[in-house]
Image 1: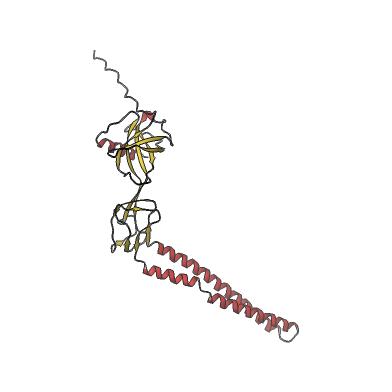
Image 2: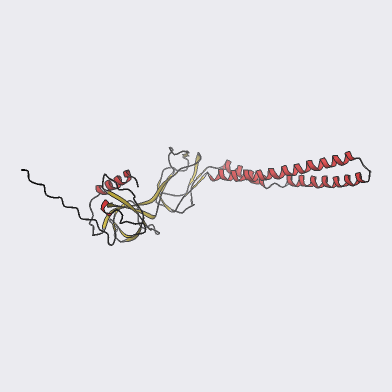
Length: 286
């Protein structure tokens, strides 16, 4: 976590009204583990939006679908070409005929019933038939690749959820134009709230005492209850401006009962904020 993020977290905690804290309890903020904006990789007219604000979504669940009639037709055409057997069978039959013809011509040439030129001509026809069969086989393999490519293009017309989460906001509706690019308007915003991310601010004097894997109890403000969490990562650098560092906790939330964006208290057994150091009294002026 960089200095700017640490300062923002400290400032946000300071701006909130104080809460009662017990020994070994530290201010924290609960938030979604990650939040993403769903954008379209291709431009097109939105056909369907399958979710509303507040809906729970699963990883891989379709969220938005663009109008894709042309892409579906192209994929079906490519699929049909990839399964065509006629050109391959035709070339294989021609090769079988040319092989038998060469065998007869060779036998007749050995018995001096035909010229060597006729045998050479039959051998040339067989080689041409082999080349035609190879070309037909390669064209069918190429058609299979084109089919996969058409399916890939079709898949770009449907946006799916990258994780289990909830819909935070819905910005576009059926009939709107989805535009590709990071600078364009997003269609949806979704957040992963299982697990929740809990950022705890610690004074610099506790640096080195926090380790990944340590357990804590998180008490959300206004909701009550104590929820088990574990330390996921600890800052490696102390923020000089505030004299603090941040540890990130992972709080399981399988039922999605806890929301993100709450202030909280993180309680650690055997860990307490050090008492402020008393300053030496100023010496009187002579």
